[in-house]
Length: 201
Image (cartoon, rainbow, N blue to C red; front, side, top):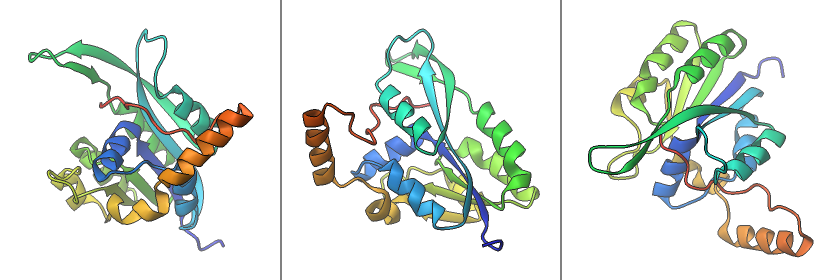
């Protein structure tokens, strides 16, 4: 067991939600955690999401609460809401917190699995590699356009297409309906909930 690699997951919640949605499935976060626990010793599984400042209720709150109690370290980032020049509602957050945490944990892990296709992470991946950490990036090239930035995919030690993981980490729609029905009959929350419209940061 001592030879097993020490892993940390870094999940960009909005990006993973958008990627899975583009592939036509929902993530089962319990199965996702179990899938990667089978690859080594899980040191930490971080889930990052943005919450709009001064917003009383967020549609992703049930998911955040479930993750917090089921093996994930949930990190919420403050985000600002604004209207762009075309009149579309946009939400902007920053990624500084992921970078700081990743650099802090680097000396305690052998591999980091980054669930994001955002090209802004390329420099973080490069910095982690200089510290001797192997970095895998999970996103997809199975959509048009691809959900992963080319520069991030090239920088990664390994690229894992989420489309290839769908059968192992996706939620079975029939099972989801059955759990929801059972939970409503028992008046207990269905677990784990599915993310609502994640904020794109």
